[in-house]
Image 1 (cartoon, one colour):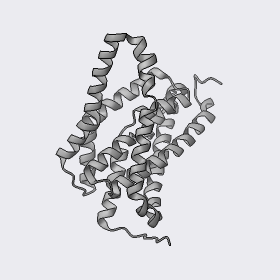
Image 2 (cartoon, rainbow, N blue to C red):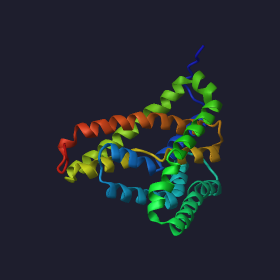
Image 3 (cartoon, rainbow, N blue to C red):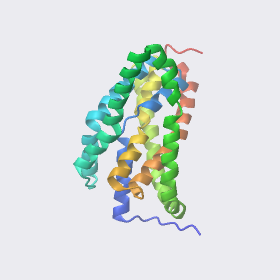
Amino acid sequence: MVVFRPFLSPELANEYIAGAILLGAAPCTAMVFVWSELTKGDPAYTILQVSINDIIVLFLYAPIVAFLLGIGNVSVPMGTLLLSIFVFIVIPLALGIIVRKYVVKQKGDDYFEKDFVNKFDRTTRIGLLLILVIIFSFQGERILSNPFHILLIAIPLIIQNIVIFFLGYGGAKACKLPFSIAAPAAMVGTTNFFELAVAVSIALFGLNSGATLATVVGVLVEVPVMLLLVKFSNKTKHWFDGYEY
């Protein structure tokens, strides 16, 4: 029997808020390329966006999260937050730079771009899928017994995505940007770096926490919402100058 519990304990409510903050404060990187490609966005502009987001994540994610969590009366150890950023962002970035330099030095740019990188096409998707399976194995009982909680988490996340998209899309229209820039510009502000949010929530609050559950719900909500926004963008590209049929 499914039990609906419309009222949350203060502790659980704070964890859900913390998860939403961790998700919303993480600007997207890799998935932006997917949404940009689906809307035939300008690749050079998309790379610039991703580069800026990478810098934001490296230097501003921890302070922004700490500030917003403080407003929500959720205290987290700053040291743990900074360590999470170092482990999940700085170390992989450094290893990527080292590996790229080594491979290019040994076999050249063509081999790196056409052969080496392609060997890891499925790694990110498999890793993310594995994380979700593990988390759901720990969160399954809570999800099944509290569907109302899942709804409470999903609704504001959906509203956030839609509002941010239309602010970006409308702003691009007002600035008379071409569609190839307007679409990815709106997408990059809407989508989130959910892999980072999930990892940091586990480090800060634990695998069984409400914060981790909120970030996972964010993953499940974001993908279908973004696909709908991609479809909307492609249907309305005639609103912009510089589009192609």
